[in-house]
Image (cartoon, rainbow, N blue to C red):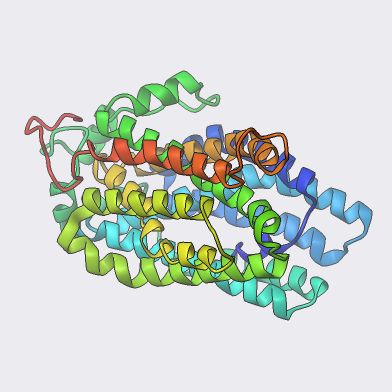
Length: 411
């Protein structure tokens, strides 16, 4: 729905400023909105990002003069703090409410595959349409998504539907935060939550939630370093390919299109096939190995066709996110899904903010003649080392389907 708007171009400095403000805002807002969805229902809170997305797109659909562009960037920066991170985390929490634990990882994979397919479709549409038509189609798509959600999406009552008889199987495979014999109301009272939301929670309160479980702590580390490396790879790859192989923007766009198509196929077909045989933890480790291999292969590319070979590893590396989301989803009860998914999204947004600050100057230094060694892809190798930290952490993660503590406390 909102993916088409990502194809609208802006200058490099404006994009970096908007991403920084958006990422910092998402760090705080996504856990807050997720917690509110645990209390008041997913549909009620999904309406907030779905409606906010329409505003900046509507501005561009009306006009593209200097005044409209400034209004667009201001509206986009403000609304993206709520729309981008919250739409993802609330959607994942909704999926967790509706899907039993044994099928949740595959459902997250299908959801991610649909998002990747939307990115591919938006890229193709942006190439086929004019700039004015692209803005109008993007605004109409945002309105259609909000109307569809309002008309057809069924409320889950803040995760309470997961406690029903049809989802007892999911409860048996999750790590509940209270005794299973307790009622849903007592479970809600016993579950650790963020403080009453009269104000935004502090970073120390969010950190206390993530450190309450070794699984949460490890997933947070994996999310941060994988996001740091992945964002660094995507932000610097164009400059590396242009400097070494004289790639044009169209060639880079074709490469991204191949990556998007491969990611969609992987998440929609490969993950459901591998998941029953390997489980989330093993599949996560394999996906992180592919991510590291992807970055290192880019960094030592010796010919213009090697980046296309490296792009083929996306068929496994794109499975990191659904595996991580599934593992953390099974470690909490139905009334904590929004808060935990929001925290993971906030960590990922933080990594996306920090990554350009590290990798952009590093790439500029590597591509200059001031480097003491000749390795133009050194910054891409550093992105691979960041993912290597995530890989080392993933090895010690306990499988999501196993309950190591029979006293029903968080491991």
